[in-house]
Picture 1 (cartoon, rainbow, N blue to C red):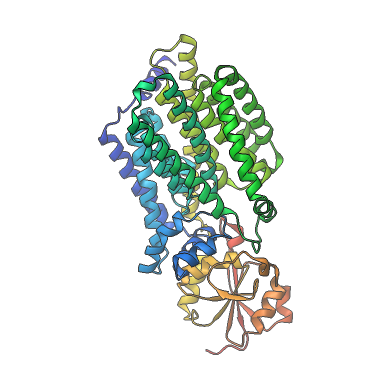
Picture 2: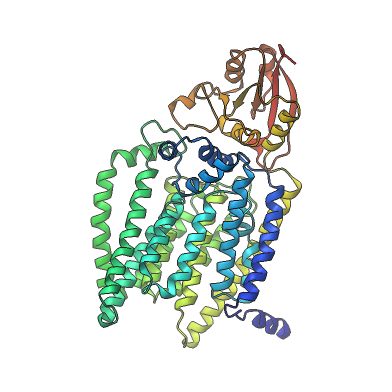
Length: 536
């Protein structure tokens, strides 16, 4: 046991931010993720972003389409020039690999982690697979949050750059936007306290930098929030919430501004007294929301989800307790965590790819806690810090197990069968025929891999490539309506269906020609139908 403890202490040392190990870790990570990406079948959420960027004729049209997508524009704007150069969606995967690799390099090079933690971090479920192999806008937001952590030690000297990084981060994803708002509040408390404590340390150049930085953060938050509020035609998972936000946007904005100003004033005035209250209050709120059925029920059939939720909650609360004496960090981390939990419980329960932001805010909080940890600690605080380091290491170990397991599953099973449906159609030369897609959001994957501009979506009664989330989508739901719409298009019609039932075939002139099963995403298993009056 003593030898094991000694070995752990040895591996718990720091790399001391040397380039060699960072490059070694990054190179290995790039090879591993690159191989996984080459075997990964993209699914609809990945392909939809590619199709929107590919088929939008202008930036204005792109932004108009995104008004009903619930996603900010930065990821789509990066994809647009790639989509102009190539119709091959693998170009998006190459860009995503570069973003994920840069994130791991910055963490390996600058994060104040132990050797063991730095080696485990790239193997985690979210870093190795969910936010690396699956090509979505989350990775871009994580990269920018990591850049913020890298800049944190020199934030006073380069505050406009900090503001720019956070402004861009606010335009990557709605959940990252919440974290940026929390970080902005924490930075306001931090900068205000630093100025009050030592006004002589900040000249006019610093003050101008602070003003510009906070202006950029505010601009990013406001513009992203305005872009995320959909128009009146939107129909999606959060349409009722969107309508409420749209109807009361002005009142909500005014109340939020006044309330935030008052809250910050109160926090700065009663800093010492409120620290304990905030820790307890955020802990209680987090406990209630983290154990809410709508959050835990979002991962259907996940083994031991309640146990993992309790472990995660305990880790979050312990980190909150550790930063109780660093008020700005307490505000930054506590507000970010609570905002995410309120969102998952009251607005959209989400899935594992959404819940990963709870891990990201934990990692950001731990990074900043290590940066601001006093050099000389009371023995009790030193022991608590050691316990926190061990807890984080154990979390990264468990993340690595899940990450390697999920990457292996993705290698041996198709994540989506859309790629193989497209290959089957191309092998028979059918891509020029009329193709009907139902369900519409699942069929997007096939469209992207086929590289065609249009198929027919009975839901919405429209030709196109990507889904338009409006009221018309509520029409022609179900396989019966799909086949009826397909029949009206003529005799040379292919139907790509993710519906499972087959009784409808007796009433319509279609034959099943192929079936694609076994995908990890069960709603992206497909059946291919062909009209009986087929012209070879």
